[in-house]
Every structure is written in C-alpha cells, then in structure tokens.
Length: 413
Image 1 (spheres, helix red, strand yellow):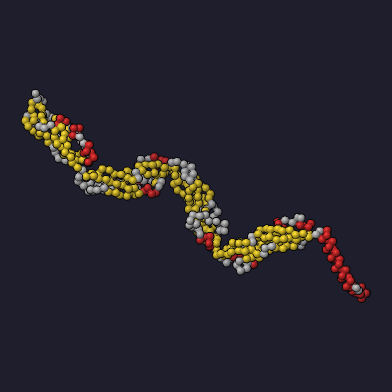
Image 2 (cartoon, rainbow, N blue to C red):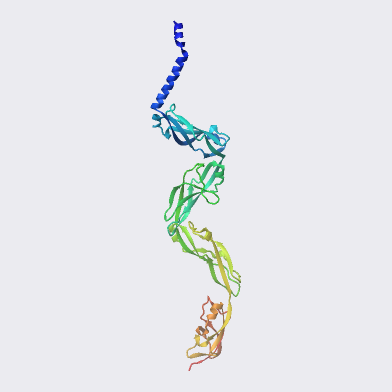
C-alpha cells in the first residue's frame, strides 16, 4: 500500500514541482494586480537609547547630524493608505557607538511589520563627544529698573543661592557668573518673585544652558524696598588755631547724603554730625583736609543709599588775622557816669583804634559807623584819660590793646 502511495507521489515529480512554482507565481501576480506594492517616503525623530553608556565614561555628546531619520517604505497599496510616520520608530543605541563619532540608526515599524519593507536613506547619527564636567556657583541677585521716587532697594536675596550644574566641559568652563534678576520698576513695597537663573560668561553674554543639567530650575528672589531721605552732613572741631589765626569755615564734601531705612527712623534724623573729637584744629596755621568715614555716625537701622558717600572730605579753612588802624570820631563816643552838671570835652575829633580781624571784614569797616563809650565815674574836673570800649561784633573783630581817650572834664555851660 505504502509503495503505491510513494509511486503516486514521485511519479512525474518535476512536473508537479513546476506546477507548484507556477501556481505561486500566478498567486503573487494576481495579488499584485489586485493590490500592487507602492513606495512612500517618511521621516521621524531619532531617539538615543542607552545614553548612560557615555555618562558612565565621564563623557557627554552633541548630535552633529542624523537627529531625524529619513526612509522609504514599500507596502501593499491597501496598507499604505493607513500608514503614517507615527507607525515607525527610529533609534540610535549608544551601545553600538563606533569610533566615538557615529551610531547606526535603526528604523522599525510598529504596525504591519510583516507587510512593510523599510529602506533607510541615512544610516548613521553623527555625534561629537566631550568630557563631562560639574560646577557649583553662587547665585547673585540683580535688579531690573528702579523703585518709585523716594524709595530704593535696601537689599536683594536669593533662596536657594547655590546652583550646581553638569554638562560639557566647554560649556561649564565658560560660566563666569550666575544671576537671578528681579524687576523692581515702580514698586514701593517689598516683593518676591520666582526667577530662572541666568548663566553668563566673562563678557556678560548669556550662555545656552540646554545641554546642562542643574539642581535648580527656579529660585526665589526677594527685594526689600526702603524709604529714603536726603540730610545734611555737618562737622565741628576741637582746639584753637595758632595765635593770630582763626577758623573761617568748616565744610563737608558731599554736604548732603541720602540715607535709607524705615520711615520712623528717617523722620527722627535731621543731620549726620561728625563729632568735634574727630577733627583737631589745635595750633594750625594753614587749611587742613581730612577724609572721614561717616558710617559709624549713622543712627541704628539707617544706611547710606550710595555706599561711596561714606567717605566725606572735611576742610577746615583758617586765615591769618590782620590789624588795621581805624579812626573813630569822638562824636560817636558816649560818656557814661559823669557827675551832674559836668561835661567831657575830647582833646581830638577822632581817635585811632587798632582793630584786628579778617581782611575782607576790615576792608569794609568804616570808622564813621563805629560807636563806643567811656566811663568817667569818680573823675573830678580837669584833664583825664579813659579806656574806650567799642561796639564791635566780637566774632569778627578784636581790639587787642587798650585804647585811651583824652578829654577834659569841666562844668557845663
């Protein structure tokens, strides 16, 4: 029985095989006639897999070319109608990295896997590798704009204030400063804002941080806004200049400073006074100039708006006094204390008086406008001398020696 079956199977075997092949070809032809294969181009982004392979080597990378995969797809027309780029996945596996410069791109279909044929146009993703580096930076708060008139920024603070970054060495090494900027334009009260830190190079240019990882995405910047007030700066001195000299002025530069603080403290301050113990004019014969730090003399809780104003230049100007003989008419002299019925007749119409003062004051001094007096109490009739007292501004003029006036005391006619 088996022999008969075997004979039937192998009888005309070549014809039977040829018939099978022809049947398959005919099936394929018919199939393609009814649903022909068509091609279409697609593209999709390339995903990098196993990137930690480089990270574990202490390196990072940047894609030079090949971030997008381009490919042709061949599939039956009925299937192609429903295919889109979303049906494909492209990836570059870092474990297949070649020569530290390129990774083969693989494109796979997520649908109709058995019915599509994929032909890649770009085979590799090109990358540049670089050493991985970490850095730690203090975040500096900066202000943008200015508060409303009469107010200033008293202080700026950042929390947290340390930024840790990791990434390509060339990028990390270019970081010179990290700032967090808050806009205080037109404000009059304390404010806080959530701010993204900005990385700057040594030229103040913003650094692209897209290839960096950091421990902070935002920080809180607080600006304390304070009232201000402008007050004068005054100074006094101790001691006296050398004989014949006098202090003519004490000046401060700047003569006013702007201070800041709470309104209650500000309103209690009328001036910033430099104590006299700081400046000694004892025995000086020429002007002196001294730079004084006024910070210690600010009331508690108040500070200078401009820190540079703390150094105030104080000038003590002195001038040598001079003496001028001024003729004062005796008619300007009042006689006090004479006995009733007696009169004093002056020997001369004017008396010369040596008056000491500053040049500018002495030049303007007119004897005709000077008055004085003598006291003749207890004098009997006859010729006498009495000391003259002049009515002069003691701050501007001095009579350093006694001046006597001659007169005759007689009974009045």
